[in-house]
Length: 490
Image (tube, rainbow, N blue to C red; front, side, top):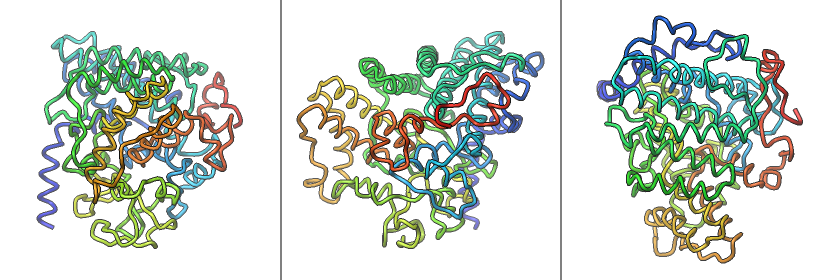
């Protein structure tokens, strides 16, 4: 017990400075709908935004909705994983919305969708407040530019998530009085343009790196990468390559030798991390609840909300070491236990974002971060764009970089994961898509990938084309805003 508390104290001291102000401000935000409350900036403009410290506190609060904490109830992971072919719902049925997501029976009243809408617009409101109020503060010009740049990036990120889940949504880019908040949805193409404009602004304002004490703040590379990802969703392949080249040109990022270092609590924020959402085990509501939600019920207080499908296990090539880093299987080590088939109804469990009970003071308060953008994914964006442009020999180069790292960790690197020798455009595109599947499993990409590739209807039995590409607008928001129109089919 003494050793455990000592470890906790050391981690707490290291992370407290980064989170103390954030926690205090995040506690101010209620769970009401964004259209049903006074904007923070209007309430506090006269008394709060006066000093550089006020500006930093305000942008710290804008990071709050990102975490997978128990306070946030952020079920973004469920939209990305449960409807896909990687996972099925597990657990005890205590969250019926997760079952609805698995079987495509969700509705406008599904709780997880409403929570996600509110959470992201809460973040957008805070970003808009920073963008409008901080410029008037007398403070160091470099710090001011950085704070405002962080807010632009975060606003772009929140809007990107909203478009993934809901498609067209209201675009609010200024502090708006309540009587002006009843606005229609903005076409997704227009939101993409705003996201890229925000990313371009942020990239010009943000530093390439921060000291370790500020790990997790938005960087120039994160802004350029989000612009690349948005361009990928637009199928603007040349723009993808332009932004990827800018990310690579920073000279900051590289693949780590050990794939699993991206998912260990002591090797995070490494050279492969482009945009990493921070969690900390401080028992203050900013820890990673995936540690409980995804963990088997057979280990501690796990809920087992996500279980790995046989189809996803079968996607791995023989000898691919990423399988054992991603999926727990019978008779393999599972923290202090040996994993057994009975730990999951499918026989397979998730490994990523989970940690030993000995390193977290509470199961739902883990301190493994979520890396929203890894450099490996940046390389696969490059490979995908080049393949789509039919520049096939070039596409194989970044693809091979990703495979070579995995091959080096195989039991027998001489036979595992040979270089892709595909010929023909579709074969190379398929190889890149396969690599995304095995490299990025359970990193909250798969369902959205299948949708943007046009493969969801063919691979997901309950998927209805023309409906399930997006999720329904929450009924609460429709009731609050008569200008909103429900997505088709719901």
